[in-house]
Structure formats: C-alpha cells, structure tokens
Image (cartoon, rainbow, N blue to C red; front, top):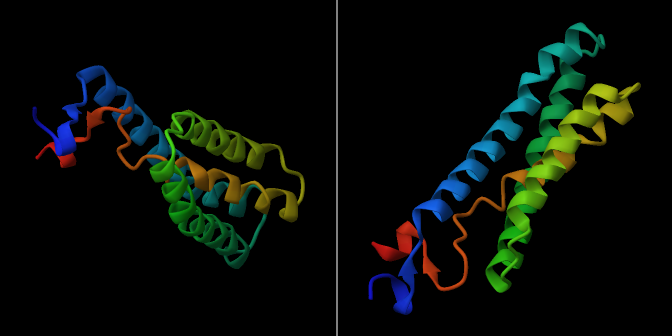
Length: 133
C-alpha cells in the first residue's frame, strides 16, 4: 500500500475537485483586492479607507486559517470546502450591494473563510499527494 499509515492515494476526481476548490478560493481572495479601484472611483472612498478594507480581509484570513485548519484536522468536515467558498462568494457579492462604508467593510471578513479550507484535505482513507510521497 502506498501513502502514509496505509492510506491509498487520492483518486483523480478527488484531486480535480480539490483543485477546483483551490482555484475558487484563490479567485475569491483576489477578487477582494480587485474591488479596491471600484471602491475608490465609484464609491469615492479614500485610499486609506480602501486600505482598511484590504487589511480587514487579510487579518480575518490570517485569524481564520489556524481555526479552520485545526477544526478540519480534528474532524471529517467535508462541508468546509464548499461552505467556505459559498461564504466567500456571498461576502464578495454583498460588497456590491452595500450602501455605506461600514456596510461595505462588514462583509470583507466573511470572504476570508474561503481560503483556509483548501489545505489539501482528501476524504477519509485517502492520502494527499504530499503524504503519499
């Protein structure tokens, strides 16, 4: 048997889904920063206000990562990947509907959970590529 502790390697469909999830998380985190010029031009926010938006998202992501990672390591929480991506998408979408600066700032931390669940988490009994090597 290959892999760590008798676990078999992850299948191609599993790796494909994990790759799509990872790409979606990268897209969500990049989308937040792509919105900054829109916020400055259309909403007339200062560069400092847009910087706070970016800082909030970065700090929230840094705080969520160890928490979500610890939870994912202790449980077979297969909902973390799709749940994090849905929450991230909703947070990014909510920025477009916000009518004031506090309302624009408040959904930016909700976009943070999309990234941490993408710590190559294969289903039970499967080894990740790193563990199989």
